[in-house]
Amino acid sequence: MTHAVIAVGPDAPIREMVESMRQWRISALPVLMGDGRVAGVVSEADLLVKAQGDDTSGAVTARQLMTAPAMTVSADATVAGAARLMARGHLKRLPVVDGEGHLVGVVSRGDLLKIYLRPDADIAEEVRSELVAQLVPVASGTVHVHVEDGLVTLTGTVSDTSLPDVLARAARAVPGVVNVEADIDVDMPVH
Image 1: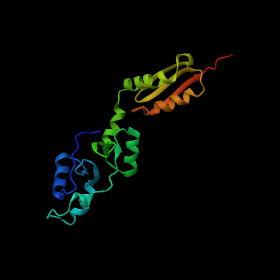
Image 2: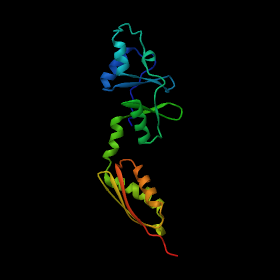
Image 3: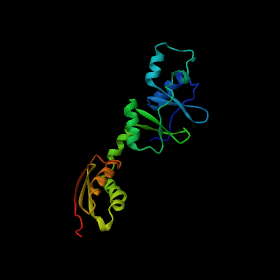
Image 4: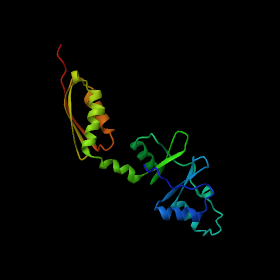
């Protein structure tokens, strides 16, 4: 997410919006109310439709052009959640808001794709410490984690039949994981 966001007020004229987009090389601008809440978004497509009328008077404003209400994502949303919203709405950028709807940043398609550049060692450490250590008690077995190019391979032996599936599903949710292969044997204790 980008925290330094270029935005406009609802009374911004076309010229100001076009200049901001050109200067900052962005394709959309959040429109903020005076209290910092996101009221809408003006995109290049919105401006192109109006530019056909060649408004030189400055009479057309962001309030008239913006798509409202704006599609936003919560600051505590997951990467997958933000990606789903962007895909459904065919959006290049998505304003990120706090609990009261105040703008805190913008996430772009490029921001979401960067997660797949996460180092394998970081992914492996998160899978080990966040999942395996919490889900596989020492008495229940041993699971080894190997990551290569975002592909997580889980191997080992556990005594709970549900653990292999639970571990695989949990590992898929770790940012940067491309896929998970689980080759975990279940060794039930004999009574």
